[in-house]
Image (cartoon, rainbow, N blue to C red):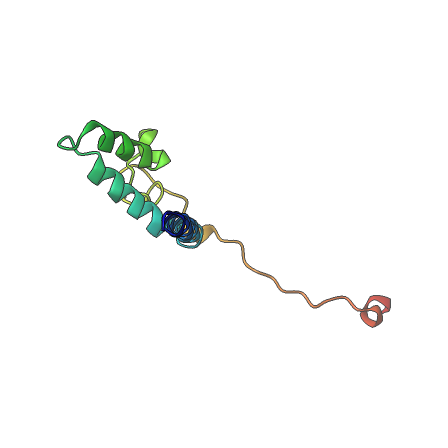
Length: 105
């Protein structure tokens, strides 16, 4: 029974980590928002020292470096400056492929 329990624990850990990495890769904004919320909940003064340490470890990088920690990038809240405007996009130009017949003319 111990071997089966250990096997189930290992498989559960691997699947949980895989799902976490997939969410982090495919939904980065939602993952960062969830990470910041969990870090905030664990970092409350009423929590014990271990929970606060885990909350500090889970904080997004910009929150640890002095940013606002919104998890949405700088300028998303409108309170700390401007962000790059999305209007500066480069237009997409599609050109037909050069074939042997069109290259000779």
